[in-house]
Image (cartoon, rainbow, N blue to C red):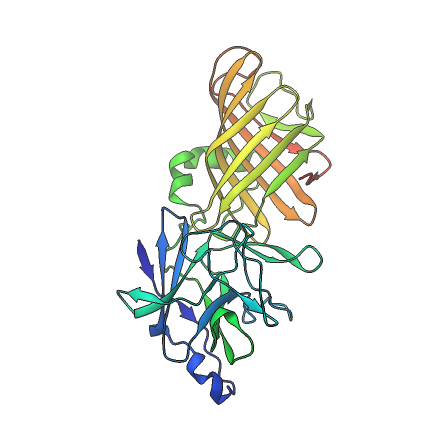
Length: 345
């Protein structure tokens, strides 16, 4: 495990005497990144008067909302998955796979002596279908909040206080050009230059949008090609692209493809971007009735409310057997001709 400090946001504001013991300092917390669990473990020192801790949205986030939700996980975890939470005098149902990030049971800690420990996975859920809701990806620069309670189980009948913090590993995920080492190892500088010269945007940065879901790409037109007799503007069959298991802690993502004749699964997918724009680098294993193929693909676009704008795809054939594919070394740049790929799932 790798241990990081938390950057707590300390505000000069009046705090009731009953809540002063719930104010955290830098020395009261730390983060571990667990590569096996693919997430952080937050440790909070178990000081006298601190009965429980709960992770919520942060009001210190520059884009924060007036209503603040407690975050939930997508699935139960062994670290604090069985912890109880009380609200309005009653314990909440704890049988659902999705769990609140809460701990009322301190345990021995080699750094803090005794600490509350909460697992923070790479993706968190907030809200409910009947209200504001969604999912965030946890990574470098993510704002969260440690809500400290005087009583156990996050009971609001006692004093409580918010301690906003930002995750900062102090380890850059991307280099000075905005790409990761993994991407540099997958795609050479020469290929990137050729793609950009052909008119395709490569978006960089370490804060890409969350792309969970399936998107319908139609109509698909050829932008450019290194294949003789491949005319720009040629229309291809429609495709469905699905994105899942995105992890902005290490900028990885899984990609799958489906059309009437071809299906494929990506390996070693990496994603970069910021401000809603993204670029994915992935190698795909493709299958059709005539055989299999391996392609390298670069996918760029901008996430919108119900889909992706200006989706463009560059692909190069790496290997193949059988028929129905372009030749090894040949490549194309294609795009969604109407400028919008709607989300269907």
